[in-house]
Length: 217
Image (cartoon, rainbow, N blue to C red; front, side, top):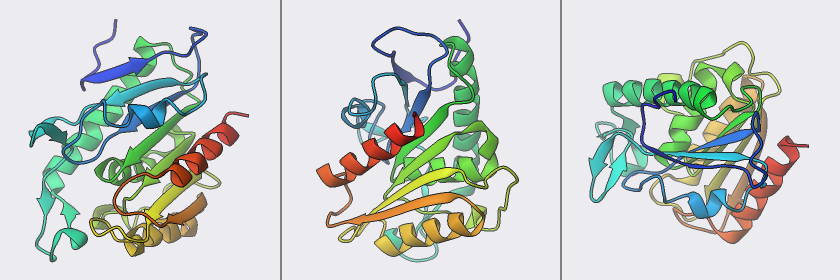
């Protein structure tokens, strides 16, 4: 079996079929690969779910990168450049390795991330849009390092961006700016806001499930 660089949980489709579509799940800062499984379990049964663990321990969980707070407080933070680059590369390598290891359909792979995982997912899409069929980024933003990217292949790419109107960790305005920028470069963006803080509520989850179901038809 191909070695997958990042620790992970793999949940196979109920029918056990190979060459099925898949979603790679990226958790937030201080969480782990188990954190978003309740969200993933709500998605269509035909999906392989591969929930990746970030590489660095943090407060009983894990983080994809340290924070650069030089621009202000947490609500204005940016990813630490070297940590971020390393995690982006590790995730891309893990997606490729898991595609081989689990016999995934390489043309039907999605990303679903929350907070740091959303920031990472949206950045991966801009770096290599041809590798992902769709992306869900919840309560995240586009980092400065990726704002100017205008990649070939992103035209019409389905992207769901969710934000909380009461989110004090990643303000709604940052998620909205990410949605606007992705739309500018040609992605097919669905942007929704919810009366929540930094978390995924029932209404948001229902919208995510509907979005993913539409991608699999």
